[in-house]
Length: 522
Image (tube, rainbow, N blue to C red):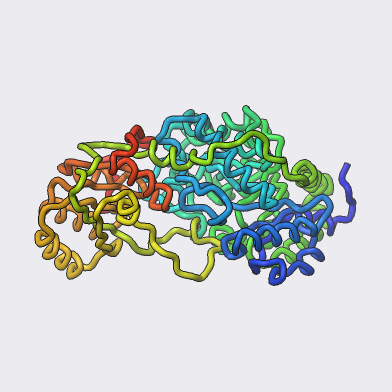
């Protein structure tokens, strides 16, 4: 039985919306109250000081009874919308490299506690995709690895940690976004693997976590999986959302869509029409994360579809009831129980460091030059809903200086021009006797970066190569004597790396993905 029978109320109550404003005074609270959404999504653009965020979230919670779901993408690694007041976690792939499933649950519990203190009720995490495509810029280190059972164990553990802290967890992106290099923020990917392969591979992490009842939500992917439905994206497919997710895998929680304003959907069927079709296919919560006017249009289109007989009233009522039940269950934050280990994120970052060749420790007393490839790469997942402001680039060199090393940094563009590389190579021999640490960032996607590193190694063959993002760089220079992977270039990963390089911690990570010979850009 649903708390309302008005189709307009029900339609708005199955939509999750985003908004502008980083304080209770600048957010459009009256417009949001009038709309009555089932959920609200907080992006980096909405995050100011922790006190402002707490006040904003309190105002958002007061918009309905029970409060709308207050959601955020707080995965760890490169997708963290809240930068202060919540534990900063290394990437999922870094956590996977530790091999410690219990640690993943501890991290979920820790970030869940912090979100609950802010009044957040749902973390749109963890990613249960497999990292199967080295050229992917949308999944990559957001995944725990490429082994289905292992990823299922880690995703389920992180979700359990969130749920134990009173935060709804969301497994994403069903039925698996990891085997395509295409980014659904920009295009509509197609996955051509056969059904048997998908059931033995991509579906396994979701199936394991669902069977363990680890998460309250499963979020759909804007991808066409030809073996399950060759004609419709998973988000709009009854075969995927109802027959496969509900029927075959037995999921009985809230099915949410990824944002319907992403180009994979918006540039095809369109945001408004997709809301109708996603609901008809079996989705319960429809995210329209940026424009409230589109959410209004979508609600009106849903009401019209119900009146025209395109969507059975029972389908809308069922979706609303599921969302409303989750809102009710998560209405009150869970008080923090036992004391949690605040050092778990740094522990994970240290233990993630994976030595592929050579000795990672630096020689005490010897000066260090860090040659760091940096710049702006396409990262739609991390940039979505971001602020328009510059941020300081974290530095491994600074982390080493905090540990007593004499260190300098030479910053090089991700795809350096020939003149930049020539100038760098002229300078390197003049620096004298010192350690060189070369920090690469996705050189397997940037040909000139790969070649520049090869030239640096020719001059400084004992240099330590630190693959700071996806680990696929580690296969590019087979003659490099010293290579480590750290699975992220966020401060927490650089701090963990610095502890290993300084001899304060051991490196115990293992590669959570295979390194194919064809990982490099051609």
